[in-house]
Length: 516
Image (cartoon, rainbow, N blue to C red; front, side):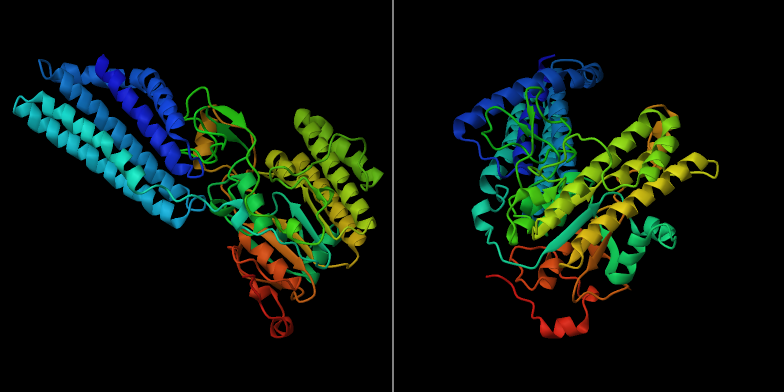
């Protein structure tokens, strides 16, 4: 039916409007926008039109006669408008940390206007059908589709700040060591911290302030780690996923946030959208604002453009008997065991590079330890019968403790130390369990998808030793470390200094300064 094709074209154009709404940094020129509109219209007509065809056939069967054409077209338009309104409203609620406050208000207003347009089309169609004036229905549909275009022109989504507006001033500062431990949360930590097998973890608990980290949702790993390094949310730094999309006609700036889901799905993108690496952060990470500008001191931090360890041999820094025990415990698990061994090897190589940087007197060292998350995802015990899994987890924790101890020993009190996990791990939720029963889900024992709280340790002059501070946000690490280093805070930092982790004497002697 021609009505299904028309409704699909309308849906494709509405999808383009939603894409532009959620990507305010994309500013296509007039010709590019026209070409994109044609491409999205073709994609919508051929894709969404086929999906809508059964619905419109049902409408034609329900209202036969001369007015079938207008009623079916109106039904398709109302369906597309309501679907676009729901997607816009969900985006406004889900993407709170990914767009500015003004952008959220505009998305909410878009949803209201789209629902109002759908109601208008429905009422006019009903009146036109009764008064035998089907042409009125087509006029109402044109006005309803024009409303989103008028809104985009009259109230565009505010663009994000440019990189030039975020000053990249570097400051000479005392040395700083930051260690990311992926998959560590306070509940897991406290379960194992009392064991004498983990002296490095016990040292962190006794020597520094520590507490829970509230991870923002939805879970986007790259966005969380970038927020931890910059002290800002994705709405400011712009890194929202481990991938982006480039669509011909929309310019060189890739699409960072996608409608319906920020997880990088292609629900509202045409088939010719090309996957590309995400652009770098608009906000400089803390390591670029300090004295050291050498990127080799930052290994494996999950932000765009950060170096990681290439494949290597051996497990430097890990005792041979511990490696042998790991290999023996993991051998029965086949591919899962080999994957964890490779992740441990990468951690050991990363720590080796960090220790070399310390020996070279580099002032800033950042790295990430990833094997704990891999072990928890594949091997965390979920029942009393998981004896082999408990052995694996114990050996993994010993390895983690050895690597942390090596880093702390190599640092030897040169400056502040922070150990951060932006998120923890949790067992499968109800929906995941149902999917497993139906045979359509991954096999993981714990995951970060639920975004449970992570953990932060701060060992520094001015930090209260052996103190647990209240829950903080993932963006609070950067301003806290900046303050403990004696530096002024940039005006654009969105986190806060964790004052509960700082001694009263340090607070009294060190004023909190902000860069102008």
